[in-house]
Amino acid sequence: MLDIISVGPGEAVLLTDDAKQAIDRADAVWCAARHAVLVPPEKARPLSPLEGAIEQMRLSSDAGQSAAVLVSGDAGLYSLLEMLKRKIGGEYLRVHPGISALQLFAARLGVSWQDAKILSAHGRALSESALCHAVRTHRQTFCFLDAAHNPAWVRESLTLGGLENVRLFVGERLSYPDERTEAYDPDATYDPLCMAYIENDAPESGLPPVGLSDEAFIRGKTPMTKRDVRALVVSALHLKPNGVVWDIGAGTGSVSVECARQCPLGEVYAVEMKDEALDLIRRNAERFHALNLRVVPGRALEVLSALPAPDAVFLGGTTGEAEAIVELLRGLQRPIRLVATAVTMESAQALLRLMRPMVDFEARQVAVSALESVGRYTMFKAENPVFIFSANVT
Image (cartoon, rainbow, N blue to C red; front, side, top):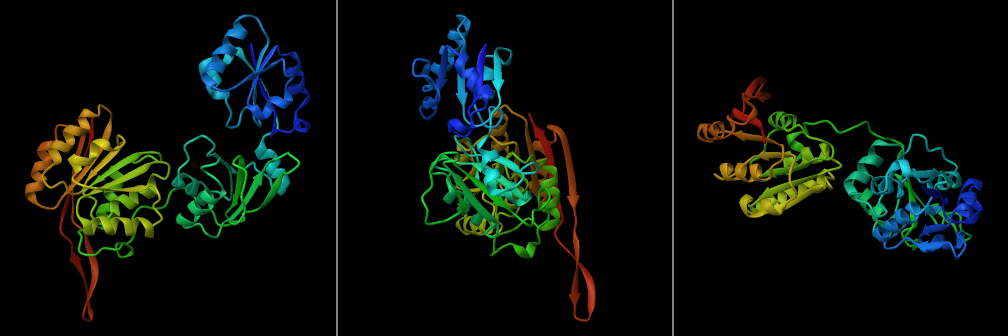
């Protein structure tokens, strides 16, 4: 049996009696260097390198010794517990709870945290977009930080995400004599192991609506997928919040932006080879705070192989490369949702031949008319019909 002992924020004063007793009973205790002061020297074992330490824990436990490992805060909140369950097996673990840094930080701030969103960027993947989505949709957000993802990174991310007006607090060295809890100071230097607390007085609910106004985009002379067609395309893509999307022939980036707003935990790659269009995509991404939109210059077949494998792909303009692109997608050997549009009969016929044999193939023709004033009269003005093809690449 391996004891997982939660040691709280770090200072011995916040160790529970249960944790102290578990340390006393153990024959060997694996711990990080900063926790070694909590363990008798003859029992302490280094936790780094981690893989080797886990193997030694297993051998010690198998040999009948009382083995233990110390984890920061509470074992159930961003700790080694899940990894140890995978490596050793949950049935061989005994977990001792503790006071987390989050609990202590909330207490210092005098705030409750039962409705808060809890994130970690400490040794984990947390994108600017994911952080901003959490803050945008929650009144309270707590985040564990590290040297690379520090309070300055949090503030910069929030600013780029259009969240300049939220309040940011920092807690560092929690439980230690030099503990500091304060509103974020851009001129201050903070300990790498600190926490952020963010308050948003006007949180939004869920994902933003699809169908941004055409007039909201910077357009130039580059063709753009209009709002009504764009909404149908985004719907047909079957997007997931953490999905990876390729928008090939992205034009102004209107579809890329809409997808980025629907995939705040994922990434959208806007592939485009024309310089004017590339500039528009970048400007529109900035305008709509699409922090997870990556602009990829170049011809599709020259750049796609270097991108992360997609969950969904939109073919907006392929300059005759659609068939080769589909072959590339098939070679990835994973389910991919594919949507393509056409405005000419020739391109529509080519897409029909290419996509009709695919699973769950569907085709639509969309003809949209919008009201327009002509002198003292009002009439509907028709836009060009658009073909929308969708299917699953398997």
